[in-house]
Length: 193
Image 1 (tube, rainbow, N blue to C red):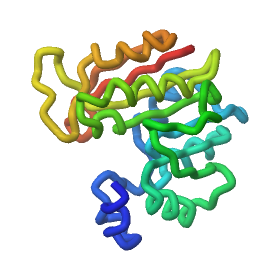
Image 2: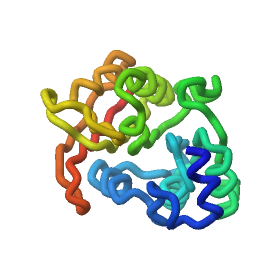
Image 3: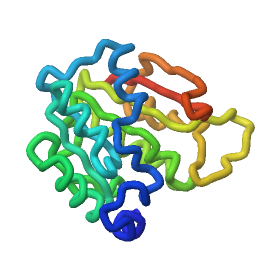
């Protein structure tokens, strides 16, 4: 991912996952569930160039956003500053101890579907650990049927792949299975600790 960000030479059009706008499903999810920032802490997983983090800060969250790519984080800081949101380089598989159950709201979109299926469960468990008691996790991912082969990348998720979230003490508030404006089947889940 860092190689792609670096080879983009600050040209967003060369970054396949950069849309120059926040993920349409995060704001829709917040609106549907009536979740508001009001100074609450939020974490954006795999933030890329920072659009989702910037949007969440704009609706009242105090946002930390991390990515494995130092180049992406530098670029996000150039685009949005580093006050709110705060951009950090971090590894999902070796997260900072300060992230442990530290956030009122956690947003994960598309990171898990970029992980090969054999390591995905570990990544899902780490994200669950970021959610504070009483906090929420909003997840958006590509979706597939249980019996469909997990072809990718990106590798769409089956519903059973979310089981590590429940094992980690999160409870499902809602799940949507829908076709989005790009004609891609997605899951959107809201969970609570």
